[in-house]
Image (cartoon, rainbow, N blue to C red; front, side):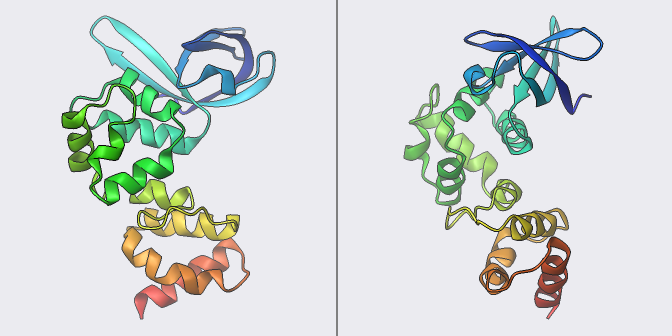
Length: 196
């Protein structure tokens, strides 16, 4: 229902923060690491609303990729919102993407609350489903190195949203990276390479 809130962060607590929007309403947002935010600073916080039988809870994220990862983790059997936040708090999205791509359940057990069985379930449930997150973050599952070209990163994310797989995109990424272009230019060049 909600995408984000713009407002003043009025309080920071160990598990959550309070953000006040322009109408004066304070929202309690559970976040992975509240101390990444600054108190008394206007902020743009992505949110996810989860409705259960006896509660409505808002979860906050520092950026859109973090929110996407949270939602993907919630689709894993045995992972709830608190476990998903704990995984995100480790700030190792690259490691997570790489481990899932390489079927490395052992690596995933380092995350809080993730045992061997849950780690295997993460690999099983997320295999091939983190490609869009990897590309939009400038990562590839096989080579988790961020790209330093924002226009290229945006173009790769757009290709993912068009339905191209990370494998297809990885094949042309090196060729695209040899030139300097706009996001639109990269997309046009990529489509020509992918169609041929």
